[in-house]
Length: 169
Image (cartoon, rainbow, N blue to C red):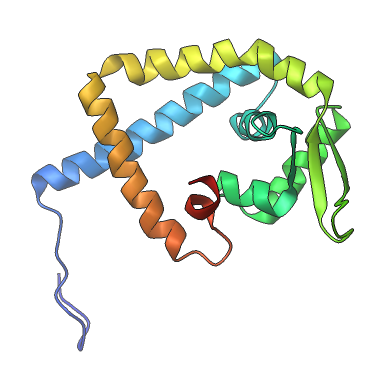
């Protein structure tokens, strides 16, 4: 392959790196698809919807500003707004104006949403354990966590709408 004039030479992936990269890509795609399918089959809930329920449930008051929720999920604000609107129609969450300043929108987990989360958590955790955690050694799983933390720190630091690590740290 030739380089564009004036650019530095590309450091191509060697065979081992290429194999690892492709394994990561296909593995993550298949894993996320499986986890999403499990939730859809069990209760017609998507993986993104499940993660929204989780994030809200982790708050003492079960609520979060929509912008903060989007950042925590590493999704666009428009995607989260669309998903939360669908969940609101299903009675899983409610949206209100922020009591602090009236400008922001706050998503609140309803009792029905919390009850669904409690029922679905074993399905999701079982899928994560069966299809990832239990397939590798604890050391390899911790190494995977360290690798993905490094990726997240690197990418979130340069993202204009994300302060995930600052807020969740």
